[in-house]
Amino acid sequence: MSTDEISAKVTAFIKERFLSGDENKELEDTTPLLEWGVLNSMNTALLLMYLRDELGVVVPPTGIVAENFKDIRSITKMVNDLGSPQRATVAGTE
Amino acid sequence: MDFDLTADQQRRYDETLAATREQLGDAPSGADGYFTRQQWKVAASLGLTGLCLPTEQGGGGLGALDTALSLEAFGRGCRDTGLVFAVCAHLLACAVPIRDFASQEIRDGMVSGLASGDVIAANAMTEDDAGSDVGRLAVRARRDDDGAYVLDGEKSFASNAPAADAIVTYAVTNPKAGFLGVTGFVVPRDLPGVVVGEPMEKMGLSSCPASRVRFDNCRVPEAYRLGAEGQGGAVFQHSMAWERACLLAAYLGAMEHQLARCVEHARRREQFGRRIGAFQAISHRIAEMKQRLESGRLLLYRGCWLLDNGRDHVGAIALAKLAVSEAAVANSLDAVQIFGGAGYLSAAGIEQQLRDAIPTTIFSGTSEVQRELVAREAGL
Image 1 (cartoon, rainbow over the protein chains, first blue to last red):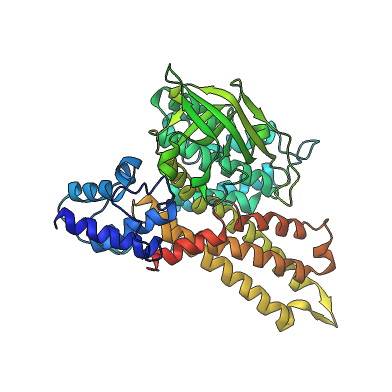
Image 2: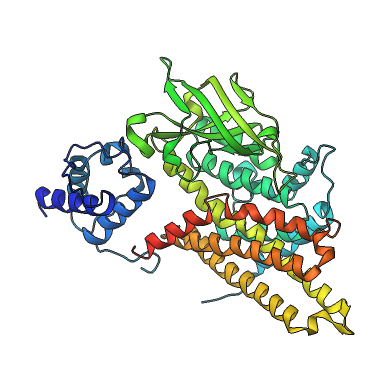
């Protein structure tokens, strides 16, 4: 998946789930998601599940740091760096 | 699938139950109503303050399930649930993150003290404006030139704090990073700038003192940091996984004891010429108490098992915490009703169980937060 595709998917997910659709189109790829509280602990857990289930990327605990989640650009880079899609699993039943 | 305890697990459970009944069964608290160092040392001599700490530092070396089984026996054998809670909070919310995230320089010495009972620990996370939403912490830690951190701000509710020698706490090190800008620390009580408040009156768990904790320009050497800078949220969630899974096991034990008392009472007490247990109103109430207890127990053992096996456990442990805490409240209300007037009077100890059960749906993540976690796992 190209970085543009990753970025588009992550942007769409954040808009729909955390910004009520973002009708004013305020979300940009450098919007400070952590600083503005768009990504709090609950929302980040949902995003991690989305990345795991929809993009096949499992973020290891050591990867859950501000540098990787500060904006869409960072998230996209992280997903891209984590590389080849892994098999999505269902919690607790793999 | 095997629902039997192993011989080792059964032996450890039986020994802990017998020892806590004998040595802490109804151990009197101090003159001020709070647990004493002597009681704490007795709990430590039974291994309870270090169940899941490494054997090299004097701990029991147990995993989450075995820790839970021992705490279940402790909760069943000891009538002072405040003391049981205090030991659990010390072990699970404090010793666990110190075990797993403290620098080597600090870890081994402190873990030995935590296991032996020489060091009592308190967890100070909650603030006036940051309860369930721990991303809204106001306590700050700024880095000084020499690498030390300077903590400023106030925590509003720290169980064990008035008795504590070490305080596990969390502070914002990077305000721009939201919940990923939080860092964990273990702060020795005697550092200048640590101000522990007076014990606050509360509804239950009365022998466990709780107070506010203020940090006034408190310099904490870097070695006392838990994990990396910004990792505090993960450190805290790790400690909460252990606390939600294992602390609630103590309440399984308390419910076991409570149910036995209700059955005994319903078999003995007669009204209208019959044992009250012969009335369906009572017998069905007892059946429902048993159902809540056993279903909570199965969920809790499974949550611990997932934790021990390194599997996804957040949703399973949330279900267990929710089930056991709600069961503790519901069963305690039922017990008061079954005992009637005697249940309402304090002497029988039945109403105290209710007061000790109420906080379970609040501490270690409220029932509301647990339901959110469960809903999230369900794909909402």
